[in-house]
Image 1: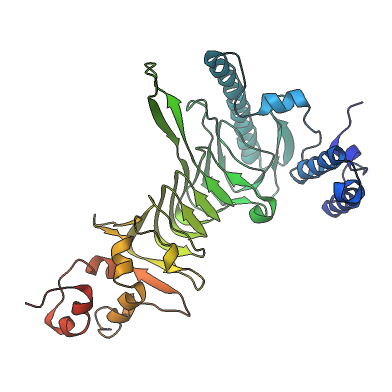
Image 2: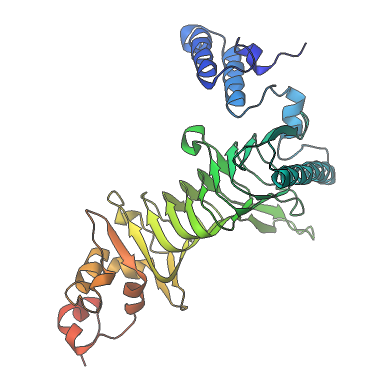
Length: 384
């Protein structure tokens, strides 16, 4: 009989989340190496606990771990590509079946639970709830899924690095897409996956894209091509709430609430709220007409890379360096005295600050005679 994750934690099937957590803590204390336990057994217990948190009953065997890896090893590059093509194709077929199954339940307003994939491919559990939402437990690795309703996800999302044909693409025609406790569970979206929510919000954890080098297809020695797989999250009529966004990512929404941005990230929104301390090189903020960028209390101006670009909807581009050298706080203060024209655009709350679309748009405009005496000199405008 195959030992499942409940057996490993020495609890009965169907145990509650608290019972699973308590069993893990008890066994972890017993087998942790710091207490003289066996490190291999502790790793096994920890993996069983992690699996059960996302509803996975059976642990992977060593062979399955190899098969479930994002890239097969093989004797030749052609071998690797062929095997990965087969894996992507099989997973995509499973997701197509899952999509049709969920749509049929929606039409009949029924509830049901079903596993898709296999122990070889990696299993995920889908459950259509009485309120119409779709619960997904397990890691989504390839293929497309469209659903007319909300999705609640317990697991991470990735996309095949070996092919664009079977790229992960999740589309909600209505409702929200949410991870369950994404920060605590460390769920992530990565490797070029795409999530589109037509009329709802997206609440997730960390988001990563991918850039990598491949040898020149013509075989020239020492020559490489850089390929990118840009992870794309879109909620045009809602908001995106996320943590760290890193390395080749695009976010599109009405409102984006974000922690840190690093390395070739594009953010497009009407309202952008930064809660972290990093906005680094090669990143772009696309600000929509009438919008604003809000930096909160603990944000360090030193963390703002001068190489980042702010693009306005009217086509103007402003280097963040230019905004920093004009001193962001002074920029807001200078608009306040002429409140009839600009005051409504300058907001200072606590130790944070807001930069609005109109303020940025007016950076490149010549001041009026009324404005010259106050703030023109600080911006370096000539007095003619």
